[in-house]
Length: 355
Image 1 (cartoon, rainbow, N blue to C red):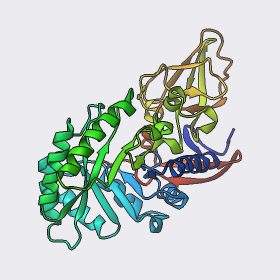
Image 2: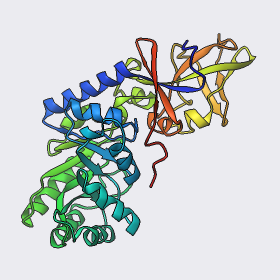
Image 3: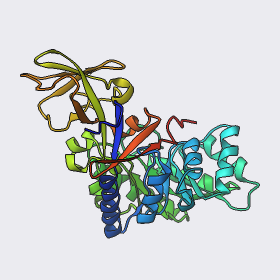
């Protein structure tokens, strides 16, 4: 199995990835939703360009360095619209943000007055205002203002400040009851904001587990999603995809079979990561659904079974990880495959871009 590739390696089936791009773009188009894919999963300008070519309105980046990597890579000519979905603080980051705004249509997210005033000060000397979406917390307990009234108050403050403009609302949803929670929040926020005299142009929601239920939030105008391009075990369990929809796998070699019911592979936490995502085991072994990757050390993945594993030393296996995004961030390059043939190595240019 792919004997020309050293293990462990991260494989990307480009046919599956391209099909995933097409399928979800079609869904969003049919629902009247703008799609703004998050690059945090693939971290590749190549795929970002394909997503835009398929119909995405732009891309989402979490960090400034991710946006810089997207604009400096292949297919960068296709990337003309970026949302930075993260609070930006600090003079050096704001200066870099200004440079990005000179290259693409840029918008950002904020959930507090300190962040907003910093953005206003940095962009007040530019000819075009920086659009700001107010991040709201609809139950995920991460960033975001907690009430519709707080969202309205921040929107009004943005509208008063130079260099920035109010562009809408943004949320990352909770895992359960997300549609009901979001609908209640956005209905109230919309009424408050419009009564205050502002226009609510954009409501941006996201999350791969709920991606096929985006239509259940009728006020939403935009969907941000990342993992859909590769998919992973967490999305299989969530019912958002099937094994056949998983484009990313880890190619690993069995290096030891200490007992009939145990085997060890050369992919440990440095590749599979320790992100369980609330699941049992550290991934799904393709073709061996009854085997469990029960524990990891840095370079070892320990496989267990209630019976014989039926694995042999030297055998190669493919593992669908629990969480594809963090796996992408662990390797310098991925290997593109197509129709069981190796195409090329592709550097993961936004790997480790956390600034």
